[in-house]
Length: 240
Image (tube, rainbow, N blue to C red):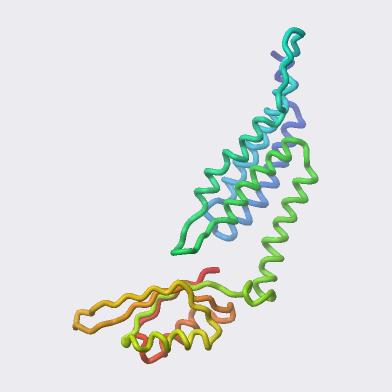
C-alpha cells in the first residue's frame, strides 16, 4: 500500500498540477477582464482536475500488476479521452442566444474546452507545448483580433446593433432604409409591426439588426436617428 501511494502521488504530479493551475489562471483572468460569465475559478477548476484525471489515467495503466495467465492491456489516456467530451455540457451552458440570429459565448465555450485540453496536456507531460498554446491563443485574442477589428477589412470592422425605431408615417419606411444605406449602414432581418396609440393614432415599429462602423458611437448614432422628422423614438443596443 505504501509503495502504491509513493508511486502515484509524487513530486512530479504536484508540479504538473501547479503548472496546469498557473496556465489556467492566464485564461481565467482574460475572461474575467472581459466580464464573461465563466472566468478564473471555473478555468482553474477545469484545468487542475483535468490534469489530475490525466495523471490518474496514466499512472493507473502502469500500476496494474502483470499476470502470467491474463494479458491485461490498458489505455493510459482512456480517462482523459472522456474529459474532452464530458466538458461539453459546461461549454454549452456558456453559449447564449441574444436575438434572432445572434449567438454569444462561443469564445468562452472554446476557452473552457481549451482549459481542459491544457490540463490534459500538462498531465501527460507536454509542458512547453501547453505554454506555447496558451501564449498563442492570448496573442490572437488580445492582439490580432483587436488589430483586425480596428485596421482590418471593412467587414471585420463592422459592429452589430440591435435597433428598434418607431415612425409616424409608414410611407417613410423606405426613406429610413435609404438613409441608413447612404450612411454606409447595412440593415438585416427587419421586422415591422403596426400598433395604435392611446390617442388612436397609428405608429409603426421597426426592429432590425444594423451593421455600422465602429467610428460611430452609440450616442452619435442615436442623435442622428432621432433628428429625422418622421422618427418618434429610437432604441439602440450595440454589441462589441
